[in-house]
Image (cartoon, rainbow, N blue to C red; front, top):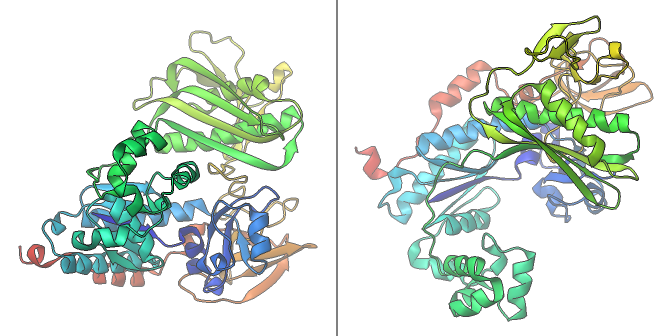
Length: 503
């Protein structure tokens, strides 16, 4: 069984597509006071910066690091290419996250350790040829050993753990190396003198269950002994789709909260449509400065894919979910998912101020306004009836777990003079091509024009309002010219070993 893990994925993508940053410390994540590191390059990890660390702490540890906001559309595009390579090597793939997966290639049934290594070398080469990025691969008798092997191989390495030497590899490792052992379980085992996988494997099963409980203790004891019969299987469909954001400053006005609820609903809705499903249940989560979390849910009789309907429910729930004293986090989740959306429960009809959603059975009812101009979507009482519609502009869909989203506008969209460029934004210029913002201030913006294909580029400064600067698609910073792509496709190594190659 194999486990492939892309090395420092987010940071490596930034270094690849922004060649000036190659071999430099890079931190990817929220840049505000409450930001969290989503990815750290190995050059930054040397100084103690790591994923899931508060960005402020990471910057103190590595003050010379370049800090960039995540570019999730780009990471997703590259992830799809990685998974495509893996599917060519094995018909059944089990993605664990955007940058790692398990696979059990039929070509390796009965293969020797040497043949497995040869296969993995070709697999890593294929991933690099397709994406330009390094990957580490581990191989072992089961998922647990393969996962540990890929960790031991990092960065940019390969480790094949032959069953004959499995115990000598596993036994000295700390128990935390086992999948499923977190800080609490580790502390519980340390109290009884167990610090290594070998020591855990040597324990009496009754002792282990006494310390960790029957379910966890039994499973971890089996894994420590190298017994792992879990098959590689496609992951089941998600039971819910959610989006949430943490604010740099607490929100104290309900209007702002409702606007953020609408943005989170739009983010979750986008993923709902990509998943081809509809939702019956809407849940709103709000957290105050004291980390008290309040949630409210509502389930409808029919599942819906209508953004207006879902947003209306979420905003109504927010009225009772929002705690006193300000809001530091807002989240919206959609659940009760079904594969086949039912007929629309509401229809949009024109009004003086936009489109109003009404029930087909109650055409005269007062609906919510759904904006249609400029790709915006909105929901709320119609302004004609004295209410306020909350608008979500196209493109403002933050990804789950981040405290900011992609910048407004799409490819080719001009900047709003009142909204300065942000460091890390992708831009395009008719003369200089694709670039990224290194910094902006005092009416000026500095852009370094470079991509994966161009190599390190030159930085130039412009007025913030320069009409020649416009928003660019981040994926374009990764793409190669058509002729180079064709050459790579022709030269992709095919992971095989002797028996398969000979038929």
